[in-house]
Image 1 (cartoon, one colour):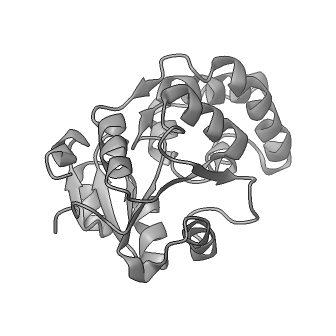
Image 2: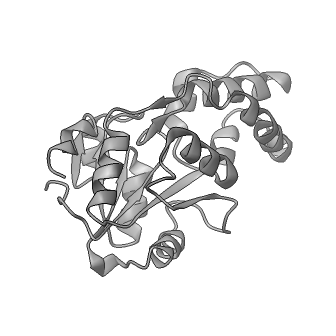
Length: 216
């Protein structure tokens, strides 16, 4: 099943789908966890865990009683380094512009801290085409909770019956779509291969967003 040329609406994941912010994220986890006296986390383990809430990843490396403080430290530190090594992934801006020019409503739905996600969206040029960007702390929910997806669809004036789709790079994104009754089209620019994404239930998996450019 190929990505529709003009979906009814598009919900985008952010990290690993539109951007690669791995370098800054990994560095921040390493600094916060090490400062608490724990061994420096393996970058690969951090990368593979990304996609869920930040606290879920942090919990892999610190004690339960340290978790709240560690998450606060992460949020304080990250703004200073969040643009270090950031990459707008190939095809991302072009595909977003193509949907915009076709009149397709778009939103970003991420488990990244909401205010940070919106700063990144502006910095990378997505905010000019995607007016809605919802992250963690913006609501009481996080991906893959369908209540959050329904919240975003309502903000877009769209619905699951309008042909809306989700584009992401992880099994979390697939679960987010499935829980809300949407198709998830996946791209292997995060920590998961096309094979893993199809096995997780993705409707399609491509190596790059460029693979969809000619379809829009």
